[in-house]
Length: 251
Image (cartoon, rainbow, N blue to C red; front, side, top):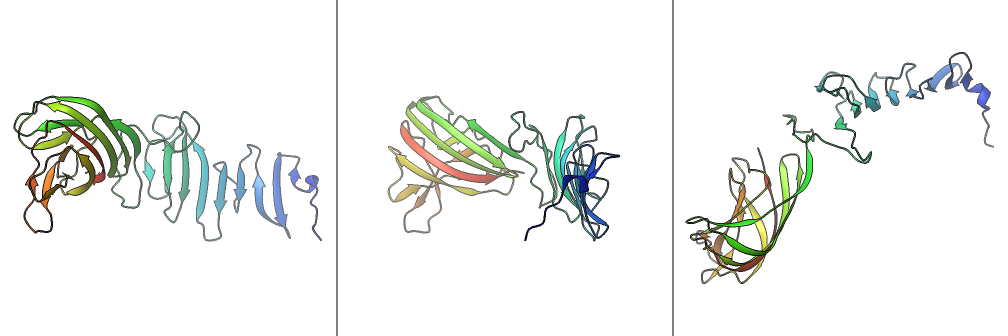
């Protein structure tokens, strides 16, 4: 049979604290600020859990402190005094953010503060970019009907998609597509998936674009079909239709 606990057995009328105990031992309480504490009588956040080994988990809002990650307490602080939501754990699980203006989700600062910790997510960003066809001999100017680019940046990796259609171009030489939102790292070299039409390749070759080292553009190359020949540059085509998707690393 389920037991019923009366409200007056939970409330301390002297300090407006609601607590739950068993055999004289307190296990949880709501303090006068409405903070919930489990395993501790002095919560310092909206939820503060302390286990018997001394490891703590905090969830809440903290303002008026300096902006840094405290490696000793594994907590995150706000530099400008505005609230920072945080989740911290003495065993090293942590997530720092500012409070989004919409009140929904997790907000990262507009300028990334990079972390050297391989287990720390220090940036997330979504946005658009404008693809532009560029010639390596003469950059030239294109006539476009579509220039659509989108990206999502998670930590040091940028995922992107692009749809670009042009009907004329004055450039010469091999072809690149500029406009990527971030410059690639010095050890990148990632391939790009492509669907294209009206793009002329050399006989026996297909278009195989890449994002090379230290660049903010896509380099169009050609690879031989069924052969081990070296990749060739893709000559600039005065009109084509391309859809591409890929990712690359930044420094």
